[in-house]
Image (cartoon, rainbow, N blue to C red; front, side):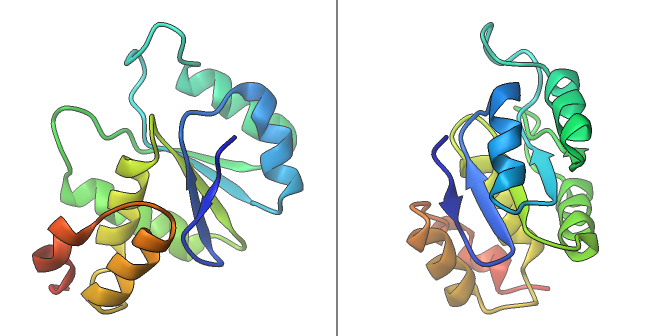
Amino acid sequence: MDVKRINDHVSVSPQISPEDVAAIKAQGFVAIINNRPDGESPDQPTSATIEQAAHDAGLAYHYIPLGREGISAQMVDQTKQVLEGSTGPVFCYCRSGTRSTTLWALSQAGKASASEIISAAANAGYDMSHLAGHLSQK
């Protein structure tokens, strides 16, 4: 697992397997957000498979898939609600971590400055500078 820490509350990662869930729990995460739609790759575990592993480990699980249709306000709101409602660190994943970082960044608009959001993402290895205009709005 290649976990990238954005801040104390959120980390992102490329695709995980059901076997990774125990390690996610052991690292102190309390919830998983899956931002990868089912069926993108034949070797990809389904959302239901990861959800079962999360529940078995005692972790909350949220499926907010970001596919070809693009980002919606609902996805950003769902991400914000999960992050704000979490009692501890949240682990987000997709194919590479970029979609998870994008949804995190957009969910933080109005809570932190665009430069703070972009910097936190960059420190985790993700370039969100293209979102600067959106991040400056609430």
